[in-house]
Amino acid sequence: MAMLDGLSKNTFFTVNLRNNALQCTCNTLTFLKWISKTKVDLLLNDKCTLEDGAIVSLNPIDSIIQQLQKECISYTNLTIALSIGLVIILAVLILALVYKYRWKLRYMFYLAKSKHYSYKASTDDDEYTYDAFISYCDDDRSFVLKDFIANLENEGNAKLCVHQRDFLPGQEITVNITNAIHDSRKTVCIITRKFLESHYCMFEFNMARMENIYSRDGRNIIFLVFLEQIQPREMPLMMLELIEKQSYIEYPNDEEGNIVFWGKIKEAIHS
Image 1 (cartoon, rainbow, N blue to C red):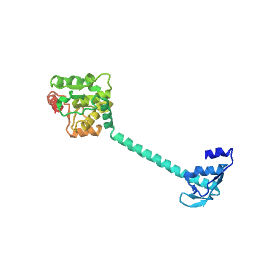
Image 2: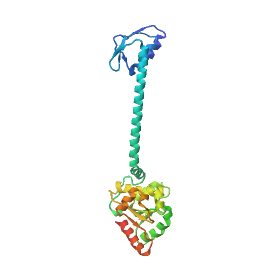
Image 3: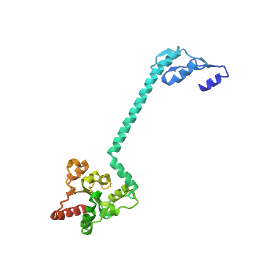
Image 4: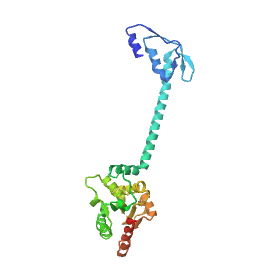
């Protein structure tokens, strides 16, 4: 059409389009508009075929163009609305899947960044660097560094991974956490309200859950130690499931109870 318009500026000629079946549809709207405006001498059929197969007169062409513009705008709007709706539905589905598997995705991501990407944890105890990784909030640091190390390392011959002592300097905290959990036979979480409020403490807890599922063949590696009384409604659902499995102990804070307490932890770490 552009070429013919260019030629018509300097040359007079006729384009014979008779015996061509003209279509009056949204797809040919641009061509119909050109027919109505071009200075090229055109020989056309006097009828055209609509979308539904009906045959109508091509004259006056402007009325046909106006009718098609109305129909095509509705069709375009419908197409745009359906496309936007489909994109929104797909986006919601993708976001729902990402949210559902958010901890698995984060676990895989941080494991991929660590040196253990191609390594799958073995059931052989000799494969682990530590007997237990101790997850705790900073408020309970004194309890861990004094009581835990004294009773489990000094007296119990256990090798613990404590972040303030054993994390690799200069490495990302998330990679350090993933490596520590992956290199430890068990993960012991010191549960307090501050622990539940801490972003990194809950990150460690959830990474240990993912380790359970994806690297230890479903074997539980998490042991909960409650330093204070916490109501079930204050705890996440996944933590309540561990309590139902009896994978926890409460700190007694008395001399006789302490003997049983540390004995239970030693048993849990080496089981």
